[in-house]
Image (cartoon, rainbow, N blue to C red; front, side):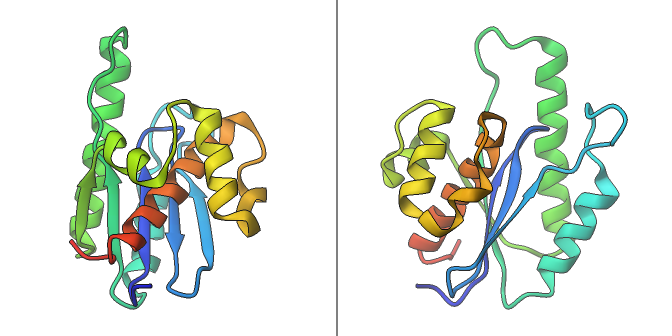
Length: 159
């Protein structure tokens, strides 16, 4: 195990931020969005999360690098790209080192087949004490963020 606090991030408005401590403790934050619309990131809330994490012992982040998906509309691609860029900017502003990791890389390494339910099932297998953090289908982002954090920890937590 690494001595780093590892942050796993599943970007997007329905994504999540998972924080895995060296002792195995896991905290998951749903991606903060504006309460009324849920169509935009709540940047001050996101900055507050990263501000708290930046005070931890040498945190490192693993951010899922994703691109446009076939059939995705222009508006949703723009929102997704804005979210991805905001995450990168806030991590940089808090001096948290970031490693971009493709979904194919972390899913292969974690033995996670494609599909959102597969991520919830695999996260429950690998992190059984925390399985209650993603009980519903809509919590797939939590499970993916947790798996990305575990992937990062298994990589040594280094860039």
